[in-house]
Image (cartoon, rainbow, N blue to C red; front, side, top):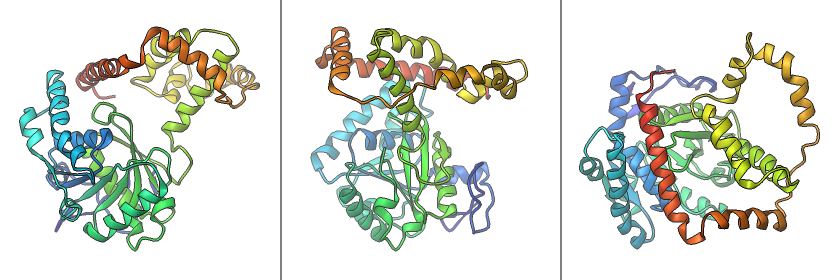
Length: 344
């Protein structure tokens, strides 16, 4: 529930219980959360994407960047993306209404005043994160969640010395977050459970799919799973077993079709008549033997160069931007399809 702009929440599934009392927010409470301001600090591609996420959900968004040119260009970019999203039926309000919720704010203190959350998106260096979080902790309301979009840096590396370190965490998105809703919540050792629960509720109310880690680990969850897949794909390519294009097809026309609406655990649960235990008894030995020779891919220049040559034969470097835009339109179509699907 929300009282005097403070939120008291139950833990999401799998998250340690807060030391504070908690009640799961009602739909009315989540609606109230949606009307509270959010600051997005860093107006690059990820910051602009987060601005879309929160504004689409109804939050007033204050978008800040130290580079005024970057900030000034952001609204035109966001407006174009909102038009595309509207074309796929992925906005509940007209694009102009959503865009009007976003305000560029050059003054950091004004950007974070009275916000429920700050989503930080500046460059990925520890020194930069330490500097910005020191400012955010001093300027933002004491009950505001301070979340970093960092892909790799644990929150403990840049929040330890802060007086308000208990409200700091990683909120790692999947790019772009307005199309791919997964966001990983990773606490530092000192992050309070109620801060994790509050972040979980805010992201969920904004249409994201938050997952909570119990503690810090390099790469969080998504990057670790992706690293394992990339490791095997590069190894198979390096051994000359298939072309990069055919290995891509194994995912996009095979595993990824199932994985777009169910994960690997649910997949194997359905792939044996009696579920996971049955799958393990049937195929566990084969899986173990398949993995017995797995080694870490070296990321050496020679196999990377060969993959790059194959990719450049299919796509010139100057065409990557256009292909990325095509990818986003395909993601919009997939998001629209999933939005219409019945609940799992």
